[in-house]
Length: 364
Image (cartoon, rainbow, N blue to C red; front, side, top):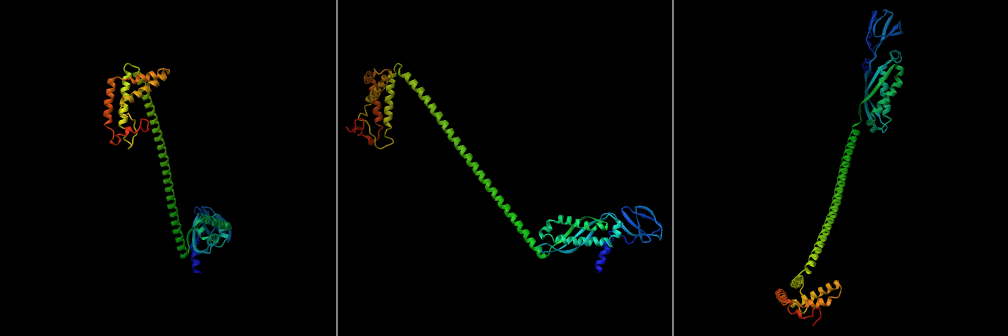
């Protein structure tokens, strides 16, 4: 066809010059060029770059080839993938003449032959893979096409350096479906990333709550420990103070006037205790001789003397009790006055209730 002939004429300029030089006797061959010389129509030699001498009318130069790597444009063609999708695909072929003799006499038109071989090889390789792999495995396609071309073009004196797929054009319907698929994949990845972010956030929050609970429990444990240590220290200090007070009191009791001071102290504590005995309840049971502070003090001192005598050997219990009953008159008056003043602070509801028992909770 005219289009095919035009294509062949266009590609032929890559390999050979049809405007071969005339034999004028002196021929200059450029670098990276190969001139085929025939003598009376028979191949004689390939002229080397530089100045060469030929005999006019005897020698002629029918073929001129460039030994440099050149690029050939492979026209667009249709190919069918393994999953029956029609594609429009083209490419670029990089070739180099490695044997001018085979290029001149091994094939009629090397440029046309290598182009057709590239197209058929590309169509064959496309039919082995699916549409999705066509876009993913372009490098593999290029390598396979180069291997197939070199295996066939070895006898043509041509070496295929590399092949590059330039454009792959699926039908419009397939492109629309691929765009929808790509959009769905992007939405899926976005949802996955969002869910992973939420999961990581929940994990971080849970870890934070866990650490906060652990720290709070450790703080509470430390607080209880500190409170216990403080209470223990307070109890120890109080016990130490009580022991010191007891030692001082013991020293005061055995000193001169200590017995009288102890009686006065017992009477004061008795009156103070009776004044607050009815503050927390409505009914109080009291001894019959609640107003006789002297008797109560004498009874307390008798108990003290008895205990003191039992601790000193057990023989002075009765004597101590008898001595405790013999109270000075001035001390008794002081204790009675203090008892009367304290008795005035009693609640009104307790009047007369002192006569209900004999001091031990029994009716009189």
